[in-house]
Every structure is written in structure tokens, then in C-alpha cells.
Image (cartoon, rainbow, N blue to C red; front, side, top):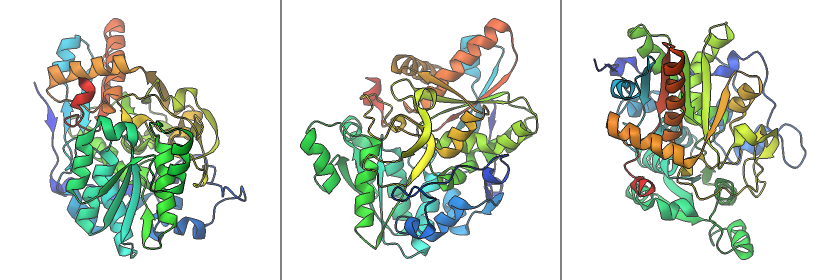
Length: 422
């Protein structure tokens, strides 16, 4: 029997969940790159609006979602929880597999959950323009959409290799009124510096962040917006996990293991963070972050302070990192090519509360093709990393005859990623 758990608009969470209130440890603070001391709110205010800075450092357990943001969430939230019965049958596994499907959003991924919130807070703080970076284009598309909704100009630096691999994402950003530039570019001094030393540089998220920050720092009417990594971004994404908990309760299921793809950490964290208190209280639940072997920040990175961008403009963050100068291979999962990781996720890995696994591109795309053929949804290459993790787990359950509940976040559809499949 096909199970699809839908909630009504009245079930959209009214609060975001802040895991910092419940963690048994304090995160290491962001450091000023000049003084190596905790960065001051005044320095952050040059980049971000004050309401988001307050959320970044807040230890309140629940933070109210503003009504204008809830109104926009209601366009596509709550998102469905679907039991992958066709996949279960194909795999002949005793495991029950569910996926939380974020691909129903206007831009086809989980990214609008924070883009809409960030656009709103910038708008009420008097900001006129947002500038950002994007890898595969999901974040850029989401911010472009949110900017159109709240009347903000949007400028996007898109990693050059993805700009050429995924032109439809650029067209979507243009559709919503955003200006998109392949990075590294001639538009910033740092971009010109990179190109002068390597004219064929394919770009990286670190370089694109540096270009976006340079623009933000040079224009008082412009603020920078980030689609992953930071605490406030993960906070906004907890609508995923909060809905998921409610949906599982409605059907009487208790999840044993949750999978999610991992790049910067936003969709993975948004899914698992509401379940972290359960694990801390002794419940036997596993969280598995699935990343590409070509950019293995959690599985092969160093846990240390590093910049979030290549030029060294950002505060230093304590995270698993491959180094700010890391240039990833030209894999098709453009959203998973970030050199670092969210400090919250990194600390959870360090403490043994989160597991991390790496997958090569061939295994990921085979998993994606199988899912598309049996479940009928073409997943984004990023999301397919979680599917690859689920297939490994389901096979293990079959071999060991374990009847467990597996949940993963299908964080985006791949309808604009078909060239990657070709």
C-alpha cells in the first residue's frame, strides 16, 4: 500500500527549533580574522542584517516564524512524507523506507525555507539588494525567488563550472529578476586576481563567496546572504524535521536512521536537528551525512578554524574543512562542492552524534537512476547521495534481516539537472 503523509496548512510549524538550546556543549565562536578573537556583532552587521545576527547567536529553543514568511511557506509547505514502497519491493528489503520530499517548492529544493526568511529580515532592516554565491544553482534560484517576493534586488555569483553545466538554473534566476555572473569573474578585484593566475579556473564556492562578499562590503545598501553553513540558516531549515516528526507520529512510526546529503549542511541539519534531543536522551537513532568522495569535508577534512571563503574575508569558523583554497573536481553535484561544513554539524560529527559517509559519483548516479525508474521522481544529483546511502543501508537490512525504519530527505528534484544524467 502506498503511504503519503500530507499535513494541512494549519500544521506548518509556527516556530523554528534552535538546537543550541539543548546541546550539552557550547560551539566554538567565530573569530575575527584580524584579531583571532570572537568576532563582534558590529563587524557582522556590515555583512548581515541585525535580526539574522541575533538569530545566529541566540540560545532560545524556539524562535517564532514571522507571519509574512509563514504566508510564503504556505505556498508549498507542509511538504509530503512518502513511503518508497516501489523501492522497497525492488530491493526486497525488510526495511521500511520513507522520504521527505522538498522538491515541491517553487524552485524545486529545500532552499526557499531560508531564502524567504532571509529576504524578509533584510527587507525589514532596510536592505535594498542581496548578493550571494551558488554552486549548482538551487540556492541562487531560491534567493532570486525570495527577492522577487519581498521586493529586493538579487546578485548571484555562480560557480563557473556549474554555470556552464546547468544553464537552466541561470535562466530560472533570470526569470525571477536576479543578475547572474559566472565566478571567478572580472567584476571583482578578487575574481580578476584568480583569473590572472589561472584563466581556466573552474571556480569554487569559496571563490564565489569571496566575490559576493567583496560586493557587499563595497555597497552600504547591499547585504550578503548565505544558503548554508551558518547557525541561522540551519535554524530556518528545521521546518523540515519538525514536520517530519509530526508525520511519523501520525502513522505510528519511529525512525531508526536518517540520511541526508551533505554539502554545507543545511538540509541535512534541518532534517536531523529536531531529533537530536531524542538521541541525547538515550534513544537509539542514527544520523548519516552523505557527501561526495570528491569533496569529503566531513570524512577527510581537518577539524579546525578556517575561513568560509577563499580570499579570507569571512570570520574563521571551527569546522571540518579541506582548506579554503580547495578547488573541487568538476563533479555534477555542484551543491556539494563546498570546502567546509556547518559548525553545528561538524561538532555533532566530532562528538560522535552524527556519522559521515562518502560516495563516488558513479554510485550516486546509479542510485539516482534506480530511484527515478522505480519511484518516478528524478532526484537532484545532490539528493542522490542520500539515496546511495539508503541503498547501502537497505541492503544491509536485507542481509541481516533487520526490520528498521529508514528516512531520508529528498532535498530537490533533478528536472534541471538532466544534462548531468546524460
